Length: 299
Image 1 (cartoon, rainbow, N blue to C red):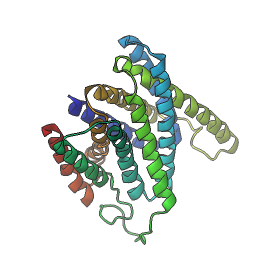
Image 2: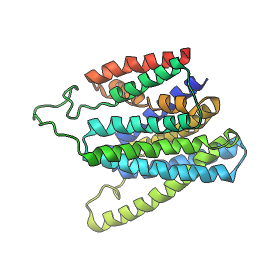
Image 3: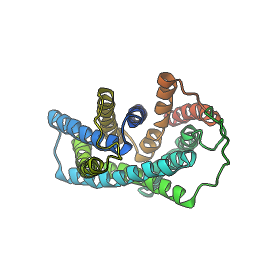
């Protein structure tokens, strides 16, 4: 059950990222993140009230602390992707987000079997491979009419990607500390904090946009953008709730690493909906991800 829930979580995270990416083509990325978190907060709050699980304020507080870590991760990830190179930032962030909770689990006494450990190692390699973009790696099929000279990734970009992934990993660790009986409420706490902080940031950005007329933050949203932002918020929040249920069914190490296979869902949707092509690394990474799942299930 833990494998199924973890893979569903990865599917949800990847789908949310795909919707968020499409929405970011229509408006600013920070606006997508901010509004989607507000929508996600309202959705998970309603779900928590309807489910009527045990409300533990301790878990709400832990979720809020985790949300702060996750918010830092999001800010650094978007900053890193904007500054590049994406071919380094994306996989380093994914690996770090999986490695931090895995190391925490080992330090806390979790000891996976040899077969599961092998599967987790293969999964980490798969995460790196499937996260590889066409930027500067010469492996993808893209617009290369203007050759670019590969540059060595800046130390700062790698460091920010590591910290971004660590922020996501710490968020996962905080969720692992909550009581499964109050599962949705930890996500309520997380989304309450990030929605509030991002809401204030958006309000300030919109005011600046109106004064300067130089930003997309204050521009009117069309119907398609609104729909995509709504889907992003609801799907991403559902992914966090699924993550909690997965933790209730198995170990943090397995859940964190399998969840970090989420780029596969994003890639699959981009291939189907946008006719994007896989690069060479991704073609190798996808079967490795399947192999890792089989090894973990067999262990």
